[in-house]
Image (cartoon, rainbow, N blue to C red; front, top):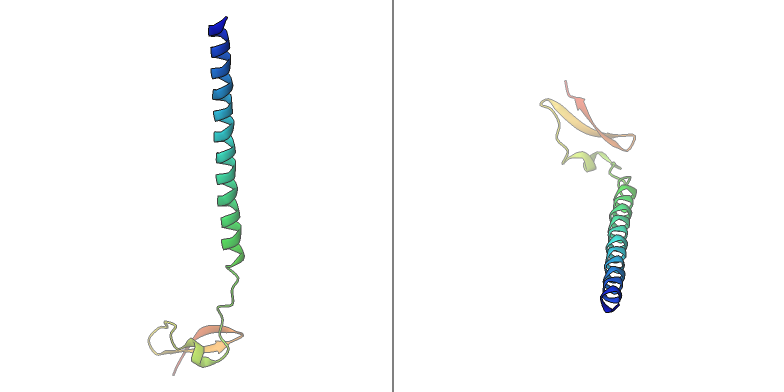
Length: 79
């Protein structure tokens, strides 16, 4: 009779530990999911230009110049 009670208590303990592991995995998955959402929300940050001086650091081909056109730096050939 005593062994049966010990086995039952061990089974209850194992089930509790399994539940704790499942809850921990769920919280970890939610943390990752929410982190990805926050990163994606920040992607549309303004990266355009206001004047031609904002485009000076951008790379362009040889014999080309960078100008600000419609809030975007664009490479234009210089003749």
